[in-house]
Length: 422
Ligand code: GLY
Image (cartoon, rainbow, N blue to C red; front, top):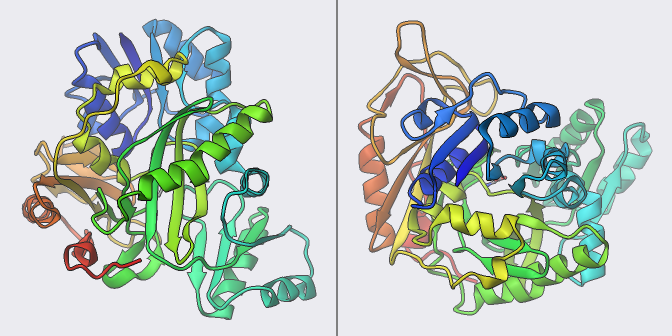
């Protein structure tokens, strides 16, 4: 199989590593890819316009790809999967219509209401709303306030705060950028990220994971795209994954088939496990970052074959997924001043390790590895216990240097210390 992976983050690096291990793969290309993928794939650094259907179709034709795997949400929401399918390519990733599950939070709420899925109460504020309308909407919520950018924000457009002034400031900032705002009721309880392979009404869950979205230890500081994750979740009830599949993912998949926008790809359910069980915080139409780096570290089933089964409508015929025993964990090394205005160009040393997944890295004119984005790289640890997976990841991280770089030291620590209960 000749495979093209679209994207350039640590998630795509993890996908490329998994795909490269599959004996069915004869050629692996990544567009545009990153420095870390150069050893395992042909990178196409000029193919940066990943949301341009014509560019991606031309590249897939040039490579004669048997399968195209689309990593980020932006090309999916832009209809790149539709354009590739129209040219006869097998594609892992939903069409534009189905990608609205992430691209439009109002659409996602509508699907959930029709499918009877438990989620937060929500109200939209549109650009042009008056001061009185905004204040009246805020009166219906909080504290705690949950204010979301109802456009594509890659997990970064959410402010969760007990402080109404902070909430109002985010409402104003999102409206000023021309996007609608979604106010939501706060869902209490530990967060779960469950990724499901979805092929029409066939739904197969991967291992449940937990992200750490705040920038600093003890969940302090602003939200980020995610600072670390681990899987599986030792505190989740034994039937936890099945409940999420039965109560959330299957009803949503069926509702999408019924509406004529059948889902094909990865459905990411972001949930809070409250007193009543799982409630949906958000859906994404792609693998999550950084959870994917941990989840795929434990997958034994050949990844390319699995993604191809989704893309060709044969997921129901696949054997049960196989997983390594134990736990996996990933920690993000972020650039100086992330998430505000991350500094680029700082030299990174010690990153030549198989546990490293690259994201915002590049080479400078002297050939040195330097920071080139907010989340610079991830380190993955695996172990028989979660504590061992933590030790392994942090031991590698301590050998990597990045001026001004920072990472959380408490990824998975509450789970290791038994401090998460539901
Ligand atoms: N883990 C957050 C995201 O992928 O959006």
